[in-house]
Image (cartoon, rainbow, N blue to C red; front, side, top):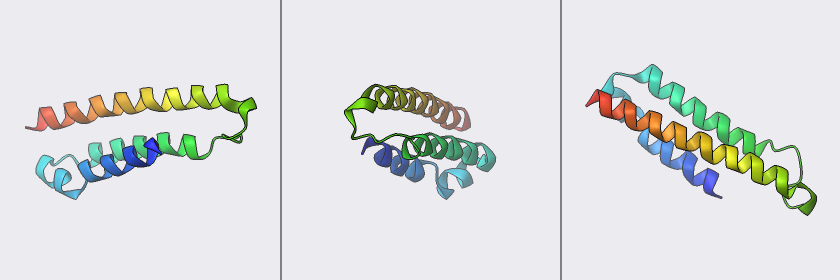
Length: 84
């Protein structure tokens, strides 16, 4: 699933090395929390994602996930850019 890949990639980027180099541990922890919260929305989807009756709701939820992840990527890029 793409969400698992996204979570893994952010964990790799926003790890202790970046915290140490940037000195922005709180900001990085906040970004990490935003990623986890967005993945959690997918995990906690209230309906059966395999049931065709809920296809539209799933697509809306997943689209929101992608939009939020794009925003988080921009935040991360800006954080790294302003630090260096």
